[in-house]
Structures are given as structure tokens and as C-alpha cells.
Length: 103
Image (cartoon, rainbow, N blue to C red; front, top):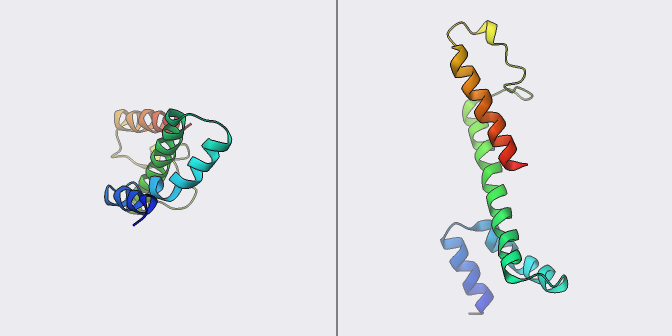
């Protein structure tokens, strides 16, 4: 078994699917651009993190059964009498923090 095949199996066994899918392409690009190993690993880790965050959001949206186009910005709080103002503010604050993290 080649080293690259073994590495890919190890990465997949640790559920690092984005690492496994991208490490060879990123390595070639890093070599061409003369990027160091830390920057190479940083790019791989950032890509893994972004994909996980995206999948998590998709999973939570599916679980919530939200209609397309619905968000906290266009949520009509006045139509939800049981929804407390404090809970709404916390949700909006957390949502804006999550958006800031991914930007």
C-alpha cells in the first residue's frame, strides 16, 4: 500500500473526509506556490472546518424543517406570543456570532 493510500485511510478513519479528499491537491498547490507546511496544514484545517460548519448548518436547517428563505431576520416575533423577547435576542446574537465566525 502506498503512503498516500495509507494516509487517506487514516484520515477517513478519523472522520477527516475533507483532509482525505484534498491533501494531495493542496500539497501540489503548496509546492507550486512555495507555501510552507504550516500554511499547507492551515489551509487543510480551514477547509475541513468550513465544510463541517456548512454540513452542520444544513443538518440543523433540515431538522428544523424551515421553509426556504426563512431566517431570523424576517421572523415575525409579534405572531409568536409564546416566544419571549430575551430568547429571541439570544438567538439573534448567537446567529450573528456564527455568521461572523464563518466570514
